[in-house]
Length: 198
Image 1 (tube, rainbow, N blue to C red):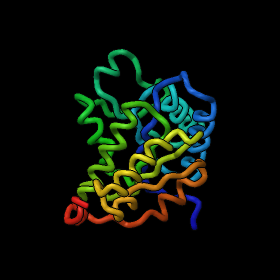
Image 2: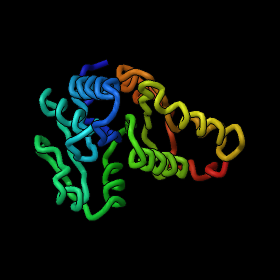
Image 3: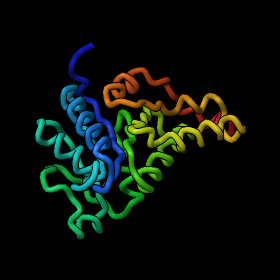
Image 4: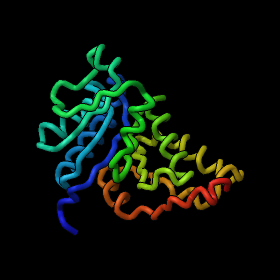
């Protein structure tokens, strides 16, 4: 396997909060280093604080390529990362989520709050309908996503989704597992809508 995956783009969903355990920052920094090493381009929410800030700062200072996507109202309150050179400013949160998925080869969800949950679940929903077909990888630092994974598993056990839908995402516990999880993700078809009901 070659060292570089370029041209390859991932979208990273993650927290803007600084009031979180250091383990989340450590894993985010390590992920950024791995992405730079493999020549992988990143799009993210554009923020300068929390895990978003950590991701961007590490990418920039290690010589990687990262692009921020942010609604104008967030720019107006100066949430944009000051070292990120490339930005796309959009009208609202809906346009932002749509732009995240354009030309994206995989999604990575790090720990986050309601915004990260919303982005992740919208991507899973679109994948279930065959409108998005790329790998989705969830980094479960500190077991943060254990309750969410249990809820997804329960939805399958109780028939709200089919067993095949468990292939839509991969859960890993270490940053080093993310790129292999992307490369080994089960293929997904635009025809998924044919079995979207379960």
